Length: 187
Image (cartoon, rainbow, N blue to C red; front, side, top):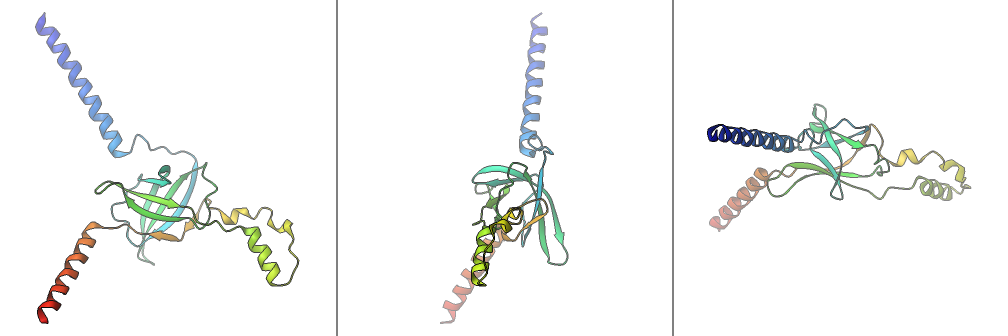
């Protein structure tokens, strides 16, 4: 009877361990938080997207507002083209929003951080243009023109900062250190 009870407890312990490993694997792979929610796609080109992966978080002010949908290579510009899937409730981001690739911690996963730009006001631009040309400004021209000043499906983020690669930084430091020591030896 005791042997049977021990076998049951071992079975429960093994099942709980397997469930815990499964949950850990889901958390690490980001599969548990991936969903194909409604949203819109924004494109950003980076010189270097090292370490960035599909389903990596897209954050703004430390809050996840989307995920990386796709990473491809552009043969024309020789840049990484990153498609960001932003949640549908974030439709007021200014057109001049910038994107940077950061690392969570010293050796953590890479993610894309967005920073809102100044968000130029289309009405103010039209009023200034009319004033400079000596024309009268018509406020009715501003209606329905706000779509040009915010990110929407298919928009491109032009202000980007690429991933910082630790190996490149170490290589630059070592080469600079060696060139300085060679210069001192020649003196």
